[in-house]
Length: 117
Image (cartoon, rainbow, N blue to C red):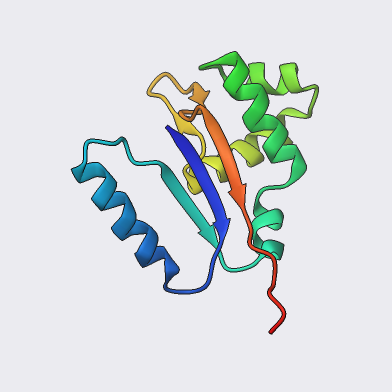
């Protein structure tokens, strides 16, 4: 399963949900979708540091936030805050034993460029 992150207009999330339901009815595992209204918002939430954490965490498997911070070479409190936000966004999962993991094989960021009329 992959996470698809996109910039899309208001209301287009309903079209994506309809497509996911149709895919699930055909037996496909639906991808996780996360939409932002602008590229500015997307990149404010998914900073390079957070994207690096996703990549590092995916490679490590299920680990503590402390182990992730150590592997990433970053300050624990900053990593803790970033992981908390990634959990809120649905891109990281927290286990009962307080470890965290990335449940996706891939993250795909989609952004259409403006069209000139």
